[in-house]
Length: 258
Image 1 (cartoon, helix red, strand yellow):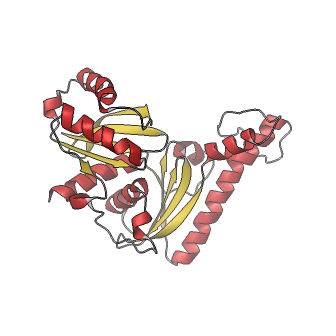
Image 2 (cartoon, one colour):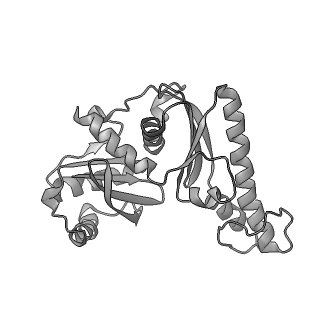
């Protein structure tokens, strides 16, 4: 079995793979101070609940956009599983696709995994949009080459800035508005419109502009926790794939094993 971990700015997602099939997945808040021992107390109990012995884990791979977490994850792997982990983007797990941008080394691991998995699963010219702490859009050509993208504030980050920089605006829950009206009748509705529909407009506008630049039909793959929420209110997505990033780790592990 393969144990994969995707360390994001907000959460760490662990997934247990049999081949490319996800047997189980677990999520924990990202905390760079969390030690390998603390990870082990949490993770080994979850494996036990799933009926999996730690000796059944044959390979471990992780990707991280939080460098301070890497050491403690390595300690977890080596101390409790006796396995030296594969680190996405390094050594034998270098990205197996061309990165055609000005600063290839600046490509984040989460974005690279989305590029790898989207090309492997869907093929052709693609635009991948990932709704995370930041909203990221990636342009991938039919050869799997990364051509560049966009990084914009995520919807929760935008809400935090709006609430944090104003004295009287309340914190609201992010949800899909019941109405398609963009003229709010009260403060909370006006905020939700400004946050939600503005994000939809930005996303749709950027995707159309990217398609024009690409010059060929490009399929749109959406991922990230809020992808399903936006899918309720736009028809611009061709695929919604919540597991794209973590599946990229399983695909990368296959490449690293060759």
